[in-house]
Length: 527
Image (cartoon, rainbow, N blue to C red; front, side, top):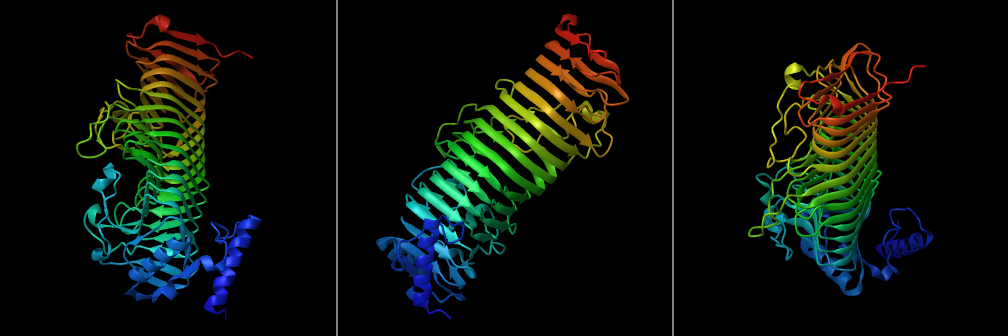
């Protein structure tokens, strides 16, 4: 059995050695130079019995480490605590078997109002771990942070975050386990150079149990995380006048009672240069992928790729709305946002419900330049002719969610107020017969549809007031009556080239209001 001194010497040596060797060990991150840089909370009076409040002892340890620059070490044990205030150049390291246990007494969490104003001022002013205007801070180790969130009740104002970091630079969170947060598990607001890797979040004990919230941050890397959350699993927000940009999310396993991967709802300054890849999603009650702009701002240059989903209600939801909520009281209402330059590719999903997937902008501001490619989605189906003929409400100010419009008139994709959408190499199937078209485009300018395989319906495709469409290399399903229906006076410049429509008794049903010259059909070559 090592003494505490020998344990400390061993830890310091291992940390330094692991870093120099480039080890992937849990102890290789953010090394300290010598064992003298390690501050053991037990030596500062922490009891670790899970009953006695250890806030003062742990805070004293953090303060001492801040003066010298070093690591606050939690050996195995349970540390009951209220709010802890991090300091610059300090790492918290929770050893395997160490649990930082959030107090159940709200009085142990002082109210903290960040100097930086944002809409999140309206949410919660309490946190278990709080950092503001710091640099070079880290939370490391194989231990656990448990918020004991179940007993907290009421609206979000009285339920603490586990972690809140505001306007910090060079932030690292690695390998820890987060459990039962009363509110969001992690909120990073206006931070720069953030690395979150290898963490797990199991938090479905209360409302608003987001796994990771990245809010108006820049240069963020999230990787190798496993999250099961009561609210959105990983969500990017913009609640103040700074965009969320240069973000990478990769190699995560996610499950949520809401959305798994989400950009929005708060979007004051928007999002730019975001890549999300190599994620597995399961048992998710809303959308697997939800991209939303409703409070001004812009969303552009976003790539989502290599995502597999099972048992999700909706695979893909894209929305540009105009809720126009200001960043804080007294701030001007934001103008209409922009949504453009998005690629979603290499997606496999099943379990999608009857609603369908929407790509929906506004009449005065379409979504622009969206590419969907290499997509395979299995839908439950079951839609009838009443669903197919529904008039979909605009709802510009409504809270964005995949089911906000009700059951859509297309069982797979409903595109409205979109400019330049490409759907390539995509297959959609239904478990039950569905009488709705697979694809409905309404007020779309610029459609490219290629290699689109569907279940049988009549029509398979409906274009209403759609301009400048090019469709090639598609095949009508067996027994099809009508493949393409064209409606609306504005429908024009529709070209079908090299499609195999021999299974369809009526390849194109052009309604009287559609000009004859607005449709060009280049026949499938006869072999």
